[in-house]
Amino acid sequence: MKDNNIQLPASGFRPQKKLNIYFTAGIPQLEDTADMIRLIQDSGADMMEIGMPYSDPVADGPVIQQAHERALQNGMTIEKLFAQLKSVKNEIKIPVILMGYINPVLSFGFENFCRECSESGVSGLIIPDLPPIEFEKRYRDVLNQYQLNFTFLVTPETPDERILYLDSLSSGFLYAVSSSSTTGNENAVLKNEGYLSRLAALPLKNPVMIGFGIKSKEDFENVTEQAAGGIIGTAFVNILLQHEDWKKKAADFIRSING
Image (cartoon, rainbow, N blue to C red):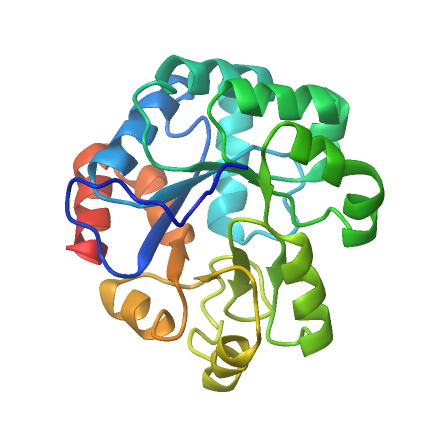
């Protein structure tokens, strides 16, 4: 099975903690996705998550909701995303993960979706609203067939037994949400010491990546003291939405985290 965060390229500088950058496909403009993928890799990220636009992204905050809306207005679809991924698959050396909601995937056809992921160079999936029991019964074997990792999310309120269960189902990494809130919530507790220590003490099979609320190098270093790395989404997407010269600002932002 493809590994989507352990093996790093031998060349180039990399931070000890792995940096995962999220962006929504189809912004700022429909055809910017391929350039975005190249930029994230060239700026030193260790992996990337690409959000699949959806009309009702209930787990996301205002910034990423706006990104979904703009991408859909731009005409982004799953079919177009796969075409864009295939156009750059031979250039990309870091893991690419697709993140989104289950309804569009089911509409596309789950096995067909997984086949396209495999043919497009995708390493794994994150689908937060896919129940674990459904994953076990219906979808895990299909993912294994196409050598795709699947990552579940845990929160500070998730009991240890449940964390161990979700970790057992996950492959690649376990996504630890820093607080129980939507993405980009300004009131989110970024560093919950008890929670992070609890995760570090558990006999998990997967490395832990921390997400939600990381906006700076200081944030990144703080929350990854006891984790394998961090995931940055809202702060990066905000650059893409707010700045016409997003390429320079986005590259500078990534380098400011891992430089």
